[in-house]
Length: 268
Image 1 (cartoon, helix red, strand yellow):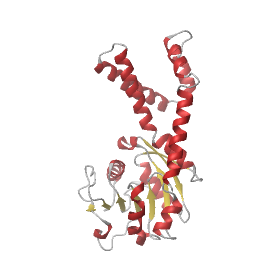
Image 2 (cartoon, one colour):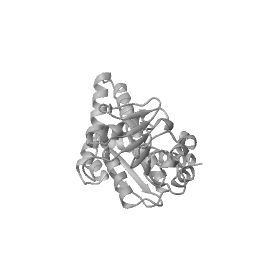
Image 3 (cartoon, helix red, strand yellow):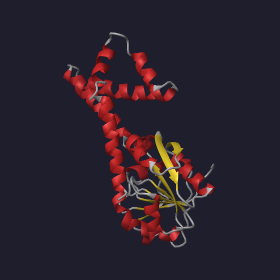
Image 4 (cartoon, one colour):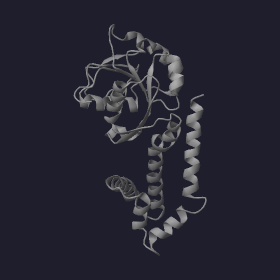
């Protein structure tokens, strides 16, 4: 799609919803509305119609897409308020764990639902989203959802909805793992005698720089790691600790398994 994005109804405007709205406004969003009693409004949203609940929406407002950016725990009470749009608008959900079938049960059998999982780098338009289209989503609806998600980064699609639980564990929760790495590197640097401000600078720049290098090349991550690892050198000594049987390889696998299981549990 090109040009102005069509009218959108954003339900929930927290951190992720606000990031997405900001990106849509940058790309040229047609007059739209959002429902949130305490929204995080980005710059440029002055023309948005903002209401605290669905009943306050202007009569005759006809969005092309309804983006569900509320907490999963709110779905049961909030979704039925928007059932009247089923059949006329595509629903794009970024709620973790809520299945397409569960959402259609709340919205009605005519609801065309795309379920997606973006991640927090969306705030700087460097996010990654994975989406799955449910029954009744036509080519136009899929293209619109693609455009809305592409405004904040890269978009990939899966045909099997069950894969979104592993997606949530890997890329949805993944930024937290990277932030933890920066946190631990900073702490370890201080333990080795570095001034706190220098340890923070080195940790943050190392993580962000390595990520930028990874993004800029098609080389496998293992090859990039090997290129830094000289035989008998300092990196080899550190990796020998990190790659012990019960260290990083096992811990990362257990972590993603735990997050995947939690995503499935959220579906009820």
